[in-house]
Length: 379
Ligand SMILES: *Cc1c(COP(=O)(O)O)cnc(C)c1O
Image (cartoon, rainbow, N blue to C red; front, side, top):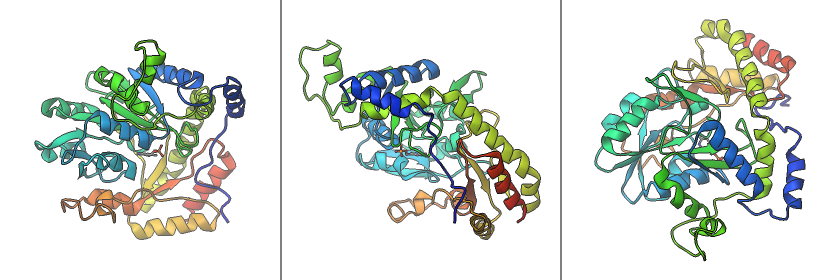
């Protein structure tokens, strides 16, 4: 029986109170009071030019693909070691996905391999900040400038994490690419059950993003009094969440600092306790490159081989602890392997086979943490 789950959604205590308040305001559809205060906070705290809450990160990525005007035959470069939504959003618009391998020191994509994959059909690069750890954005933005490409950050795991470029300035992830997508799924640091956000940093996209968000109508401009009637002006879908979701999210955002510092404490406990053990077993612990920060989204380890990972997962399970693996390389997936260009992508496969994630959630107690690290050390 599992007594220590992999994840447990943390409630700050104000979620239901704010939902009740949202209901009593008499407007529970989207783009109301709580949506606005959440979006304002993100904008002010992280410097995104414009924020639009969405029903998921998947939806925010779909909005980004529409905004980048991805069409049949366009190519989009992204890591193979990522979640399916990173790719689906662009495939829905007819794109071909060109997968990049991971770094040898980190599951994030190897930026040095991107340029060789760019051709006249390439339209966008989608860096995924795996475990909330930045990709080397200087390199990626330089390529985007040189070849006139869009950069859409998949920042699903990257809230409150930062990148320091060669100019020495520390920038929040999601504020660097033209567009960025965040997730508030219950497995992320800040949650609303299902939920997400599109961050828009390139002003050219702001007006159209609002229209796409409001089902292809200029309803937002109408309510601001900028046009005297509203109608169907563009593509769009139902991307905005209800006020009930936004009210829940507000209760989480109020406690952002507290949540982050607690998660970091847990992450550092793992690192300290497992360092010597991991070296003796040939296991690599999570690393953070110098240009990145750690938002403690995830504590992962990369095992020597698939057999060692299987044994570790079984050992944890026997002790009631759920440790889990993560992505399966997208270039080998049932859906995409026939469409992939056939290149070997060995490090993505290595992480697919050897990476394991340990439980990490706000309410994980010191006793439970000790049990997890002691169990691993008995291996
Ligand atoms: C969680 C996640 C998503 C999807 O987020 P949803 O909000 O569930 O749609 C996309 N990309 C990455 C890298 C993720 O971790």
